[in-house]
Amino acid sequence: MKELPSGPSETSRVPREDDPVEQGQWFWIKGGDDEDEEDGKADWLGCVTYIGSNYFKVTSPPNEYSRTGVRVHFDRMDEYILRRELSPELVINARVLHHKEAVDKLLDEIKLLTAKLGLTPAGELGDGVTGSALVAVHDTKNVDAHKKALIKAKEKTLPDLFKKVEEQHAQMARWMKASLLPMLAESNNLEHKTRSIEDRIFVVELYAGLCENVTRIRKGEPASNDEKVHLFQRRHYMDEECLVNYDAGGMEFDDIRDFDRWLMRKGNRERVLPMPKCIVAFQVRRDRKYREVVSMNDYIRFAELAKQDESTFLYMRNGDSYYRLETAIDFGEQLFPDTARSHLMGGKLWVQEWGREIITDAEHANQVAERNKERREYKAAKAAYKKLSKAKKEMTSEPWYSGSIRDTYIPLTPETVYYDDGMGKLAEETRDHNRIAVVLQGLLDRSPVFHPHPPWKLFTAEGFLSGIVLHHDTTRGLTVGEKPNFEAYRDFINTAIEKETHTVGQRLAWGRHEARKENDRQNADYRIRHVMNHEWYAPYGNPGPDRVAKVGKVNRAGTKCTFSWERERLRPMRWDSVGGPTLPTHFRCSVSKLLNVDAYTKGDYKQFYEDPRTRAEYLKWAPLLLAAEDFVSKR
Image 1 (cartoon, rainbow, N blue to C red):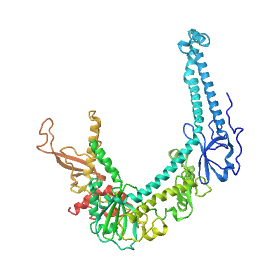
Image 2 (cartoon, helix red, strand yellow; image 1 turned 90 degrees about the horizontal axis):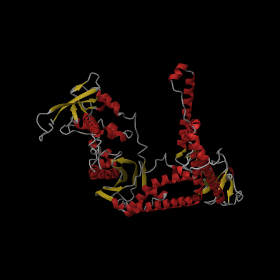
Image 3 (cartoon, one colour; image 1 turned 180 degrees about the horizontal axis):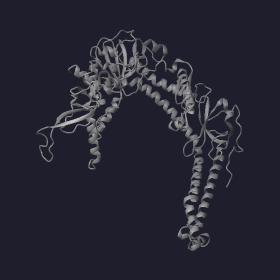
Image 4 (tube, helix red, strand yellow; image 1 turned 120 degrees about the horizontal axis):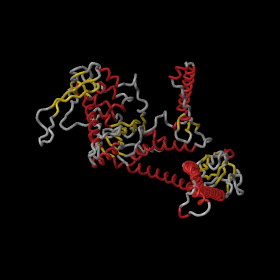
């Protein structure tokens, strides 16, 4: 078998400074990760698969799991490049031949071993080693030895040989694929170009195609010509603003016109759209709504509703005229970046290794401070642990510090080979936020929504500032004191629960309890092929406790409440199965799932609704709070 070529061939040479690096060239890299070498530090051969602004990437032939590659900075080529390979096909063919001969040698060993053990197929039996092996089997003195040899071959020798064959086949396949690297690199370049063209097409469609989706919801006199357009940063949610169907999981796409009517009420439109010319972004709902599927038609319809829930609606005001623009584009939680996060404001930037994330200098300083704090706490805990007795050490876990691998950031400068990744991430982030500018320019040029207005050009910094005012209402909302705590509030007013107290929450808890029972029943019934998996369920003829009901009994510990009501009597095996006397029914519920309506003060819900820190969680509590609000308001 030929010796494995482990270095440059006679046709390789050291690259000169004036040699241009081109895609598809092959280089020998110093001290790499070649899997053909046991020490893993041999020089390895790779192909130039990508050329960036300040580096080029050299990739080795792919193995079964991945491709080994290295980024070489143009100013530091001497640190990585050994020689340029002018005849890579000679090296590649030599390596393919090397692994092929290794496979042949291993197969010969397997044939020899099986022949010695008498495992050759019967049709090929004859004189020689196989015959001797079969004679040995019939010799009673050698039966035990032959049996041990067979067991060893089965459990150790043959599996090891087959594994080596598999490894050599994998290496041979690896080098047979090596010639594909230049073509794969060219394919990746075409993919980048295609993505760039798609981005440009998207911008054109964004500018030209959205205005047809604008609907006027109220007619009136427009604002003055010189009035700027005010753009609010935060994305709002319709079901949180107007609480439509809060007791049924929130509003749906079919309720958009209901939201329009709510928005146009006096007081609402001035609060949500306060400026003469302004834009506020909405989505139907923040979280996915649970919809119980009963049929295939429901499944299809609910899937479409879930998709429509993610649509973005830009509500626009121009004086006394109001408009709604619908688009499937997700602008994110913020229509534009906050100044603290804007990478266009200048300053030093840091990029995470492999270019996954960009952070500002202030964010990096905070991370460093946090890591230093973790190290200090670890050292203090370690010192305290060492002072413990042996008995206490056995009962206490030793302090552990994970290190700072997750926060490996380097300055985003041309000196790093991740400069292109960082700048690409920055450009992507900027492009995403600039989409709103494209939409606005299309509205100004192709729609009468904000007419009259000067000929603003929003693609220039001067034009944008002359026509648009940004309101950072996401990160600059003023809050005073601690964040409202709903559970603490509920625990406080629930301490007064006693017999005859009005509460809310029991019907929701009862429905979920019945849903678990029904789901278990369906899962246990082999005749039911499609289990419903209800989240809330009411059995036929059983209305359950009222939405606001009186507590029938409280246990001594004050942790459980019992509610009572009447349900219809079900008489099986008769056509008139419902009717006649009703049956008393009881349900025991944990106090932690209730809300004391008698201790609720009108307007208490506002502390959770108006604080931006609890707005995202508010809809979870809305069914309880607003049911109590309706009750004390006698609605």
